[in-house]
Length: 205
Image 1 (cartoon, rainbow, N blue to C red):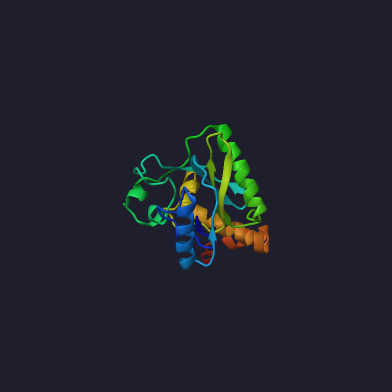
Image 2 (spheres, rainbow, N blue to C red; image 1 turned 90 degrees about the horizontal axis):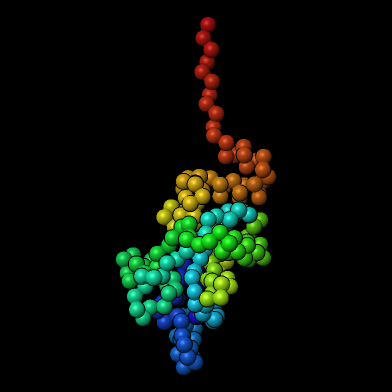
């Protein structure tokens, strides 16, 4: 259970996964006191992956490694896991990029993520991330389509860009190029992002 209109794992904690109706009712009551709307969805046990996008281009697949999560903690990305540096949930949820998966699984994840990205109209421009889980039968499930993930230089999208061979300034430049191209056309984007030309030195007699 999580807020329907929040981001950055706000409202997600150790109690977000419930296993019986009594706990569910109590959690609904608690959450609706704090948030206008809540979302209840089936918990998908399995490995968690992220696929980043820049325009229509998919970046290398990343995985959240939950093997270090302490006993009694559900393997989910809670608010503490993302923002409480050094906490048990932070140390127990380690991003790995590129993910150690087969080429076949990577391609399937990208294919499903791309479809979700297109359905949510993310492919027209900009950047984003699709979060998925793969169950024990190997079926991918889309958890979230994020059109504005954290863009700091130590966040997930930056790690994916590095795995693609781009340093952080190059990632920012490419995001700007995609946005400008979408708004003003390819030629205008190239001109606006072109390196400034050096002024010619005056001629001397």
